[in-house]
Image 1: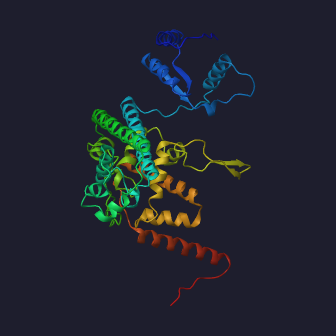
Image 2 (image 1 turned 180 degrees about the vertical axis):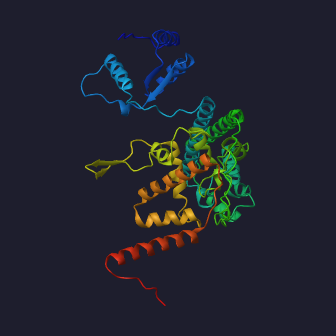
Image 3 (image 1 turned 30 degrees about the vertical axis):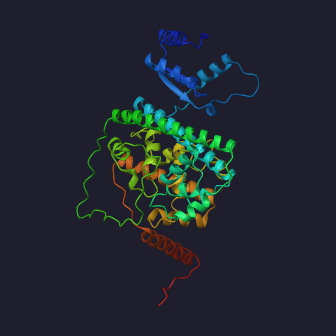
Length: 419
């Protein structure tokens, strides 16, 4: 078995690909460690080789001293026996969307940190603006901050910049703008505001590139829905009790919802608690093609939302927490937490889970249910219909009644309905 060592330069990687193809190699197993594998995978795919990107947790060797030669021999042996599973990798068009969306998410987080720094500077000078304004990035907050940086110190003059839609009065706003002005803290406030403006410019540039990448994704044509059996009636549209979803401030400037509907073929925002940003996270990480996952259980397991049990002799010994968290799983967890006060079918289901399970376990279970719903909608091309909280409560009562009847029959008893 020949073993050669190559360098990390692009020319050396191309030489490696030529050497592998010359020996009749068709597939190459590659560990996903950091970002070093990305360039090698691109070169191998351009050479016509099929790359198996495997998780390092699935290629553990015996403990002890290890070298690169021993590691490559171990990977070759596992791959020869068919013991390595290829990781999911979206197509090239989705990879571009994923890179831009992750970069945009980074700028959103940096802008949030800049707002926190501005709030800290105001609190240090005892300017209690947070008691009257809930968001410093709003119209009134930005106008007052820029006036303070420009040199205005009069509370009445600053309060006159109030937007008419603000709930607090101008007198309350002026009272909260009396503080101890310090030059050193004002300098940090000025730099935090400049950093916030820089991040907003970076977000605008990311939106332009993201719009181009989304437009390059082809539209998805779904097959027509199957015909109903003879005598069957279509499912009645349930009356949705969820509130209208407001447009998030972090949403891109272009019509992202229309682009997602065109590329995915379905509108995932019809699901309660799934907004445009959550749908974009699903699309950028997976794409519109879910054929890599045989069913919804595999999809939930890939998202680390399925329970992982250590089973011995047919009995569950312990519950093993999932190693690492997926970006889509995190987005679905946040969506599940927003269902606590939703007057919908999903809201009633989540509240029932919270009554039976611990908080984190209930959130994970509800996130898994949302993942299964997304899988069904994308693969079947069907629209989501909310049946309402009353429908869920009715089904739950029917299940509990049947369970009580079965338990009574085992004891030789019979349930009689109350008059």
